[in-house]
Every structure is written in C-alpha cells, then in structure tokens.
Length: 122
Image (cartoon, rainbow, N blue to C red; front, top):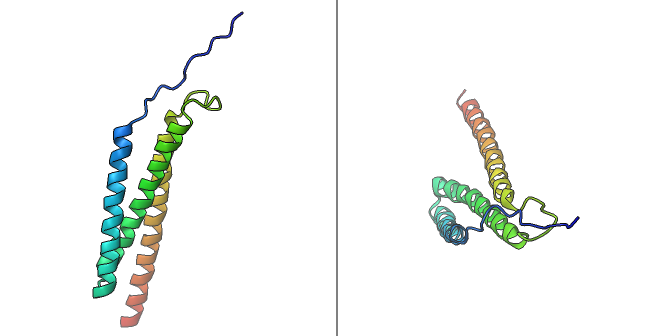
C-alpha cells in the first residue's frame, strides 16, 4: 500500500493584508507617539489617555503581524497536520482577549476614580 501525501494548507497567505496591517501599525504608532508627546507637553489628560489607548491597538496589530508571519513560516511544517489557517484566528482571539482585559481594567479604574472624587465632595 503506497502512502500518498497531499497538502493540508487550505488557506492561502494574504500578502496584501499583511502589508496593509503593517501600514496601519506604523500609522497607529506614529499617532500614539504624537498624542502622548502632545498630551505631556500641554498637560492634556485626554490626549494622554487616547495615546495609551492607541498603544493597545498597536499591540493588537503586532499580534496580527506575528500570526501572519508565523503562519507563513510554518505553512509546510508537518507538525501542522491541517495547515496553519487557524493561526490568524487564534491571533485575532488573543487580540480580542487582551483588549477586553484592558477595557475591564479601564472600567475598574474609572469606577475607583469616580468613587474617590465623590468622597472628596462629601
């Protein structure tokens, strides 16, 4: 009985998507740096908060780029018996979980800050 091998790579690599993600990452990091610098120079808490918020998006884009590159590197690796198509899905899931955790931390900090300021007026 002859053993036949065939490809289990059912997802083609999206080079255009990877390139666009890199461009968006560069734009996001540039905006983040400008907002943090301007917020620091002018004492604007809104610019500082948005700048750090952009940092979480930059981290998510880095996870996405890692997933693209990891999937491309391991596309023909025998350890991935069904291909690396799910790597991008797991990257997206990881980004969503990380952003959700940051959102929860911001919510807790906002509630804490609100309660602290309320105590000052009582």
